[in-house]
Image (cartoon, rainbow, N blue to C red):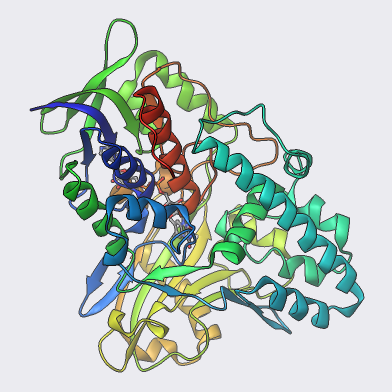
Length: 484
Ligand SMILES: Cc1cc2nc3c(=O)[nH]c(=O)nc-3n(C[C@H](O)[C@H](O)[C@H](O)COP(=O)(O)OP(=O)(O)OC[C@H]3O[C@@H](n4cnc5c(N)ncnc54)[C@H](O)[C@@H]3O)c2cc1C
């Protein structure tokens, strides 16, 4: 009864995709989630009739042709959820221009070329370059989730970008500082400035939204996690909530034998996937000689930034677009300095999901979620003070906002850590810096990492890819082929 083919620790998107693929491949699969509900960062909550996504703004990969869609399809639950397309993907407000990031990349290129006519040729060449690099990346990812990852296979465009920063890439094509800032408006989605973020990470982030679309589940992000759980159970898998894994048990040969939960239940399996935070996996779930695996990675590449998140339910409508980046200057690098958090002259992101999805707020009301980048840290932030500072920025973007507030809640990096286990509230796992070559080898043959602490990058789609790869590798070892 307590014996499984595979155990997945955690039900973030990486764990759910792993479990979905393994279950659809016929393996006896168990997901163990410490929280009372699935999803990790794709969870949601309700306050007085308002529905808020805990973290995420929008994602790609959920339309036909996308990995998350495919995983739901394998479980037979893809028609149990609807996704709303976000178009424009974002609106970026700079001091003297407001730029729509059109879902159609050609429309976006035309917009940039007409705003910056002297850079029109560069715009065309830049997008040719990043489109071709993205195709290379898709080719590599395709190999990794079908035949197992082969790091020896590298295609030219992506190979040339691997050791470069996004700033270096921009400098190849543009001289206008304002345009470079505009094209860096999605850096907060990775938490690093153009000079530090890997060009590959930015190409992947930007192009995945253009190629696969930006979406939110109708209702809320929690729906996506819930539909995965429904599909996993429908296909014979098991999902347990409310008691996390406290120990991964190794046999004398150093292979995983199973896990022990906080409620002291023990489960055994031939394969273990950890979707839990990397530091926790190696320092407390494994411990001993594995401590250094986490320590080395935390030293380099280090962990990503976090967010202070303010959730507001307000009376009345908010006009405009549902995903907003507010940039009070073109000094993109400055926004990422540690001491710049909460200052009035720094960037902030806003999601107004109720604009496109009325089910998220009572009639005549709206939701607005503000994302203030801040360091991932164990320092305890003063929630009330941070809320006040964030509201000042809200007033700048939406004058009169404060007077309309019906509901207000907030999450600090410590809140994020408490709910999801992510170390110091890290939003995206590892820092996506140039030259990153995957996670440190741990040598446990039947244990894999799934999610944004794996090798596939940051964000929901990358975490999903990491989960898919772990599952496909296990199925290959078991002699089972599932077409992803
Ligand atoms: C504020 C914010 C905004 C973001 N916006 C976007 C966005 O717009 N688009 C995008 O693509 N990405 C966004 N991201 C990033 C994205 O949400 C994450 O990269 C992704 O969701 C991580 O998924 P994951 O599978 O790695 O696991 P997580 O979501 O971290 O989930 C891990 C799960 O494991 C569970 N767990 C941990 N320890 C244990 C244990 N010991 N036993 C059992 N269970 C355990 C946790 O409870 C959790 O459910 C955002 C992140 C944040 C914080």
